Length: 394
Image (cartoon, rainbow, N blue to C red; front, top):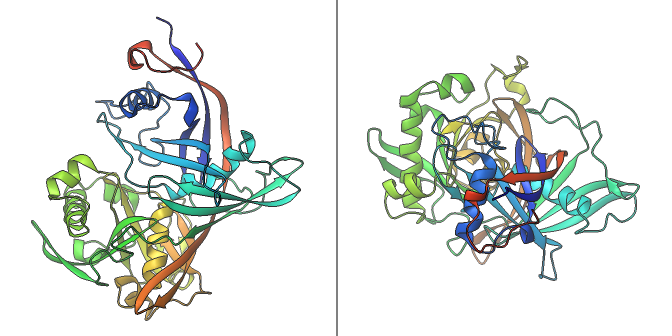
């Protein structure tokens, strides 16, 4: 049998890359769809390299996005994000990727799902199907096309591009709200560590925020140092799994580790500090409001996940959280909090209000860039396509 040929676009969004599809070009059956997407990315790969696929063997580059026209009157397109495990036959659909969210609006315009409109900035209304949330992407357009060239510098990306501003509307979590336990700080009982104080925030993605010092490391930790320390990463996973149980996302820590490696994320935070970014630039303590590092798919992220930045911004707007305490109080709605990450600095903000005694986060805002890297087809071996599933034209 011949390989299936499926239309796809390889895109960078923020500090991540992924393969974008029209949802219509993939099987409706989730199991058949996932088999194809695993083969597209090159997973599972016991060598951990994804050589035989489009993935690039990091949590930032082993991702897929499915986009379709929206039936909702308040949205233009729906999108579903999948975090593909590298060494397991698993795609985690439990959360969102804030970085690749940046590329959904440009994809929708360039693929004709949303008209470009007049020159200027096109507001593309996105429905984040994993979490059931609205996001507005402000995409620059010129001459009927997405404007990709620009002067906006994004730390963690080598080249400047046009700024895309994202507004995460009502980014708080589900029925349990932005603070699933109802507390700004919880104490997790973590095997091997004992009690660990954490702010459990469900915004952007569920996130377990802890002081880096509680894990025995400085917040200004270098990526290579962190990812070469198996004991440190095991401690992070133990904290993450305990947080997942406390947030009601898993019944046991073992279940959290086995079945939902993508969420919750872990954010390590600390006070402003001088450090050297991954490109060799010096980041001064005066240039950041706090230092943050993000653990994603078991490794320290080379920058920050976009949703992790949203969670930290939301935590900054909530009294009593570890983030607000580091800032010396709640961040005001018009303040962009400068997060010092491994590759530089990311400003992010959130607006919160109190209604009937309950804190509600109205929106979170951050800016990223995006670019098409390749348009064409991905080729999927016949043995990855289930019998009877609807295929793209061969």
